[in-house]
Image (tube, rainbow, N blue to C red; front, side):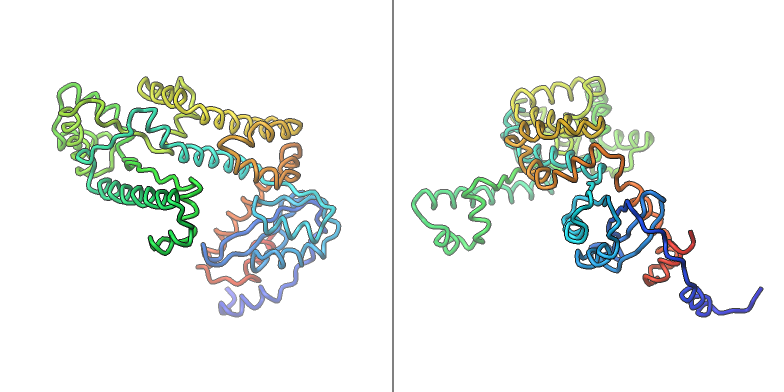
Amino acid sequence: MMPVSNDTLLRVVRRRGRPAPPAPNVIGIDDWAWKRNQRYGAIICDLERHRPIKLLPDREPATAQAWLTGQPQIAIVARDRGGGFALAASKALPGALQVADRWHLMENASAAFLDAVRKSMRQIRSALGAAFIDPTLLTAAERLQYEGYLRREEMNAAILARAEGGATIKQIVRETGQSRGLVRKILRGQRSDIFRTRESSLEPHLPWLDAQWAAGSRNGAELWRRLRASGFRGSLRVVSEWACRRRHAEKMDEAGFRRTPSARTIARLMTTGRDALSKTQTLTIATIEDGVPALVDARAAVTAFQTMIRMKAGDELDGWIDHAKTGLLASFVNGVMKDRAAIAAAIVTAWSNGQTEGQITKLKLIKRQMYGRAKLDLLEARLIGAQ
């Protein structure tokens, strides 16, 4: 019941001294967003005592290095896969053990497999017999995407023809008006511009729709109403376009058009147990595995990497690198090799950056309670001083 203004309370909080935390031996460091994609800070946590001990105003390596230099007793630094904090820890604490975050390692491996699937879409489409696209079966948005794909394919062929004729990169850039980087990428075979039909919101409902279609229920509006009753939240247009495409497909030769799933869908199905797939999905994945064996090797390498982390089998890391560095995961393996010491430590030690991520979640909650207007000292007072 004391009459006091908001500003007075804030001044009291800012003046209130906090005892210095005990010197940490094991820390976790990670960035957090003041404003996403624009401004970031950094948080440092004492992993032994399970509490944050410092907020930094930015995530620059120099700022982190300046703080770490004053803490020579630190023996272990857990951090993410980014190079900024790794560089700061290497300069400030050359004798400290750096530990990569295990969750990010698992996520990076899954993302690497998805990237491998995307690079293999040409072979996948050929294996599924869907190399031919009939524009009359595409939606309006897919038709625009397909026309852009054809233009890019035409440009690729023109650049390759000029190069075979003896033209230099500089001449090709001047004649076509394309950038030097794009021309170089095309000549190196690194531009895999693959046309993909859109992944529809109907994907989970396609088995039911196929069954209804086979049973003779072919009115798009009626199918949409029944889907809405079962929880579908899409529009009538989505179902109507699907029904229209089915009618067109039935009038064509069956081999004229086969819809290739998206790269994300293929990656998910290839990493899902066969007992959890439908008969159609199983046949699709079996066809892809038979036609693109490099993807099978990539999947096995990702599975082995994630199993190695779960089982803490650090002695298998070098053998895994030798086996996987020549396949579709070469880029991911190169990253593992550059950060090998931290990744090996993540596999065999108990430390990771998980609790730091949890403290960032708490920090975001406090920042939003203060309507995003809190300065660093008030955030520290609420996050650190209150403990």
